[in-house]
Image 1 (cartoon, one colour):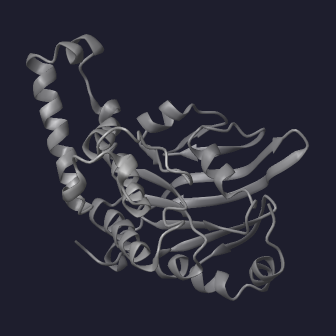
Image 2 (cartoon, helix red, strand yellow; image 1 turned 120 degrees about the vertical axis):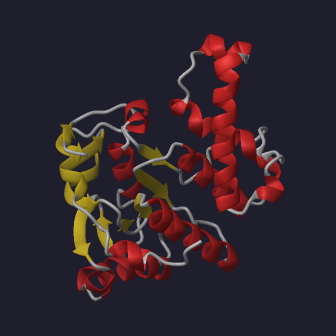
Length: 268
């Protein structure tokens, strides 16, 4: 596996996602206020900001969990104001969550298999009978999932219930489930939160490998600035739901407003 996305940065294409003047409020609380930025095909785009800045709310707007009251989101040239999560998934958007959302009693293999549901062509009756075409189809999907397990180096836990796995491995399984959908756009909500240094290094490597080897466009939320500066092509900074800065890691690192926001305000 590759250990960096330097080669992939030369293959960054046109805009795949455009967020324009997106505003979102809950009652009297303004979560996002006229936020605008774009994501290019093949890049790693980080969204950073203090706690409560609106980062997760933005991901929820992109994949249809939240419906913004203002602005538009254009994905693959299709402009929309609202989209359901299952529609986003069908169009190639996959998501991991800040709080792990796995089926704790199911094995690693079965959890990742659930990510293939949208790819299965046979209807429920065929699958229930598990004969003929349905059986062949499941074998094909299982073979694909086994490739993901090999890619993420989790062969040893493929038959273990995920609820009994260490936190870092659970996060890796959740990444595997998202990859099983073969997304064009992968949204990662704090994929390295709560990890120790070794686990973070592993997850960084896998994120870079996904981007480099699959060509997957990635938007990630991450609090570890070292990680963000190392792996991102461009960075969006939010603060109190507003766009504070947008640029390369070097641009953002030297931005006084960003420095002030991180050093002077950590808000919920």
